[in-house]
Image (cartoon, rainbow, N blue to C red):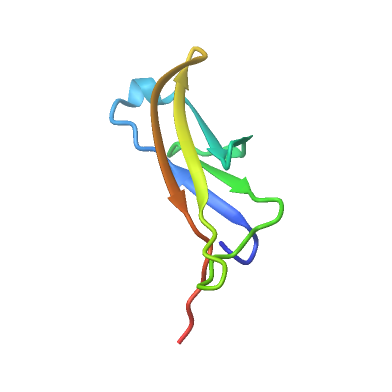
Length: 88
């Protein structure tokens, strides 16, 4: 949600037994952000000073998501995103 700086990241786990013992950790622009995890293995994170994407300032956030079990990283993914709204 660009207006509030809230980012929701979700991970789908196919084994329900592993889901209860797996932690989702997200890092945005190199800073670990932890939020409230939900049953569907998603986490909502609050950006302190959201920076919107625009043609004049095309800022993109780098994000790394890790799934950890017993403190060990068992899977990870890297991507990027921007905050923008479009109205017509």
